[in-house]
Length: 193
Ligand SMILES: CC(C)(COP(=O)(O)OP(=O)(O)OC[C@H]1O[C@@H](n2cnc3c(N)ncnc32)[C@H](O)[C@@H]1OP(=O)(O)O)[C@@H](O)C(=O)NCCC(=O)NCCS
Image 1 (cartoon, rainbow, N blue to C red):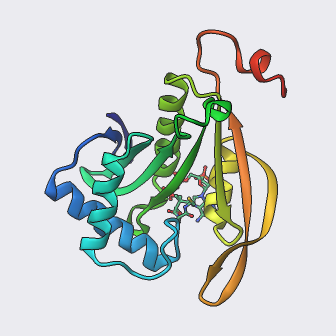
Image 2: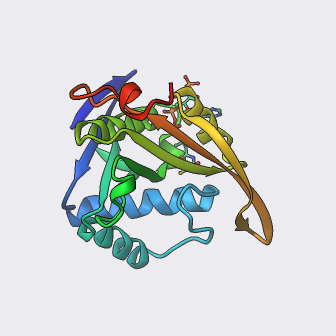
């Protein structure tokens, strides 16, 4: 686990492969608080704990998904998922998707999301991935500032990206190149920069 101290708070991010009932309850509460506040998880309506618990237990079972949780003073307050392409998608095996990234409203503004995404990037680079992709609703201004501040490049906007409360919302698509720190540089391998 990576830990930082922000003022009087301890902040940490962990990659998890199993979860205790206590942490799962906190994770579900944080997720539902983010959903009620307006998103970051695909779900638009508040979800009961059983549905969220099923989701996270399922995520832990899927080999192509990696779950990261963020803690503030020991309490689980957010998470993010790294989704690698299925094994048959050899052509895109160098890239993965960052999805379902959020911090509960009661734990925002401490720098935890930045720590969470950096940890995801560090892990992705460590397993040899060269590109991270993500997408975000155009209304999620904090997330847009977060990802652009971390160097994600917007390459397109989908005008009919999501439907929220009866309205169509556009979404922005981003990518970021990673340097695994060994082997050929991403620059020479991909040849984009
Ligand atoms: C986006 C989100 C994850 C940020 O969480 P957070 O822990 O408060 O963010 P941090 O404290 O780490 O802030 C990091 C950067 O994000 C941006 N940011 C965070 N909150 C912001 C706000 N209210 N307004 C503008 N920018 C903001 C800033 O660039 C900030 O850097 P700075 O503090 O140097 O200005 C959180 O607001 C959230 O969960 N939102 C809803 C879900 C969502 O949009 N998820 C992304 C789609 S998958």
